[in-house]
Length: 150
Image (cartoon, rainbow, N blue to C red; front, side, top):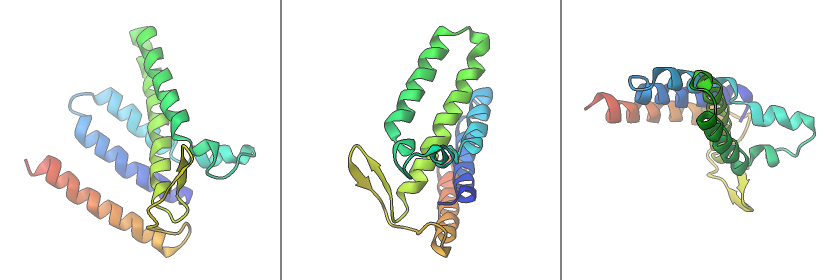
C-alpha cells in the first residue's frame, strides 16, 4: 500500500477509536488517534535505512514488545508524564495499522515464518483505491450498526 493509502486506512481506524473511547478517555484516545495517523507510514520509512521491504520493520512482535515497554513505562513514570506513553501507544497502533493494511495486499506480510495475505489489492493499482473505498464503506456501516443504532 502506498503511504497516502496507509494514512487513509489509519485515519479511518483512528476515527473508530475516537467514536468508541472519546467519551470515557478523551486525552488518551485523542493522542493515540493522532499518533496512528502520524506514524502510519513509519514501517516503510524505516526501510530506507537499508532494511528488507516488509521484513523486520513489519514485525508484529517488535511493536507488541514496544507496546509492553510503553505500558511498563507508564506504570513507573510520574502520572504527569503519562502523555509520553500515550504517544508511544499511538506509535505502536499506527505501525500495527500499517501492518494490518499490508496483510490485505497480494504480497502480504510474514508473521513468525508464516505468510499472511488476503490478496484483495495490488499496491499502486486501482484495486488499492477500490479496497480503500470498500473498507471505508464497510467501516461506516459497522460503526453505524455498533454505535449509532443502539
